[in-house]
Length: 286
Length: 295
Image (cartoon, rainbow over all chains, first blue to last red; front, side, top):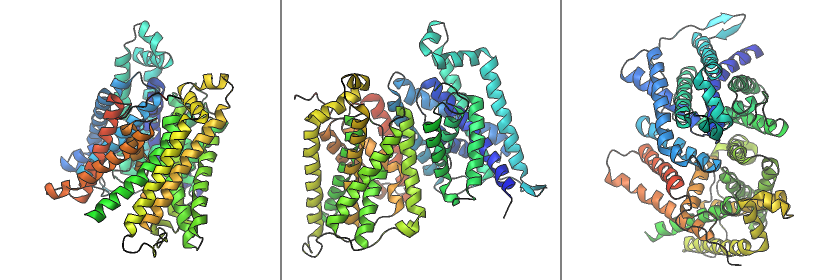
């Protein structure tokens, strides 16, 4: 049996992938004040956009990954325009239900085109590295590195740029921000585009690390929530931190419970956090 | 054709019951339950497992309903302390975890094979026209639950639930124990969904975990919102229209040649999703909007 450290490493990679949609979900929740259930389905969209480019047009996966960022961002933006914008002023629950409808549509569009088959990218097979007894895939290192870099970039954008400041102001108090001249709708559009891109990029990583099928993103929904809630809704570093913990606990947890119960582990994390420390570990205001 | 219509009508009845249950929770009290299918499953499995081990139906059915209601009360006591958006996530997660439990704990639930040969009540006595008998049974259950819930809606208890839905602070200030009322409403709705589950299990004589996928909860929501939430007649109408749409589109396969089974199912679900989103935007009050109660 592999050592515990192997599970922790695999968990870190899973957590790195999870961090991207978790940040997107967390920031959009804070900004728009409803849990957007479609975010985890954006992973599926991204994975299939890259698959289309990689297998259909023979584009190398690196470029296809960029294509997935753009494509998924565009899908997220279109969804926001069509479905969420007309409902901005409604109570959060109406929007949450609409977002489930959106997730359902996207997942089934993918299923309609590509059926339920499991697929994978056309990439050269590389040998895994062996470091102090751990099997470490080159893909896994790349995924972890890019995920952490993207998180750092997102955090820098939020803290340092005018746009990031406008975004945080809108999240804190949309009315006040609008009065002060922040173009609220533009801020929302940028956040949606960026959030969609992050989730789409994560979808390619997930497809590379595991496999590609229409349920791949939706199946992560509870883990994404767990990461966002654990990190404190609205906090980007919190979501990264939360995602890494959720990833590690879910992987290491398979030592104790059958792997089929991974989702249940995420659910237990959600319950514990909500009951013990509803503001999350980072303590952001929800 | 008669057999087909009887089967459809029976399933509409079962769905209508689940929708009525959700209407107590969401329509009347404003409590989000994205995992309504979980309580349907608890009802179906409890009754199925008890009766295949030889328990009489007169014991298995009430036990199933009670366990569904109890599960509802338990989840509510934990989750109703949370805000609405968290509640959505917790109920959704609960349903998924329950499905994993049904799938993996084969010692209790028989796992992916499902429970087979579930006894059908009074099968010998109504041999020959059993499906018609069962339809009558289901319709009687729908009728009774409908009448009971209509009474409840107009009763002082129902008035408190509606007050909580509109503004729970005001209800609390008026001296109502809001939390207790919420738990009761949630348990009642779960119990009604559990009743639907028992009828479903003994109708098909077979249950398996994948009958209770998360999307089934979505269908119930769609039926409720389509018909008009807060309105029991809306819940009935919505269930009938939804199943009509789903069943009707099944015949598309005969008309459009390249539509494979997977594609047809996907197209149906795309359609369901779009209808749900458009309804939420355009007509959140549904086909039959709730009317003020004249007490």
